[in-house]
Length: 151
Image (cartoon, rainbow, N blue to C red; front, side, top):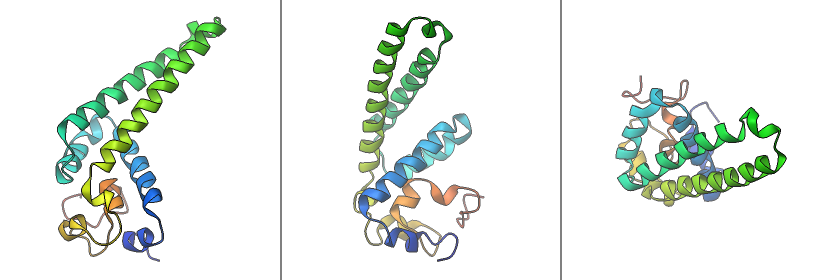
């Protein structure tokens, strides 16, 4: 298998594994903040992700970041009960974010039917590829990209 052979990689994986790869890839791009915002907007548009799902996902990510700051606050260290309560609230927020991320990815038609060559591959300038890699933005990562529009 050669570097960048996404079709070969994806042929070895089941649909659930491909979805997890897409979750990790999208999570990585979301964590990039303003530096990856334009790239994400293009991916959402390219894969017809509904705007309301994007708004919900971003809001939950923001809430997750705020909750993490609270949980990591030095003020809580001296109050074990408050620390446990904050941790439990944070876990719930993490679960909401993950559910939102998963539902957003499942809204991508090409990823939902990630077996075979779908419309993503037909539009992609790369000779090989798979819906999960494209939906996760893996084509855009340095060293992986063969697309003319990704630089």
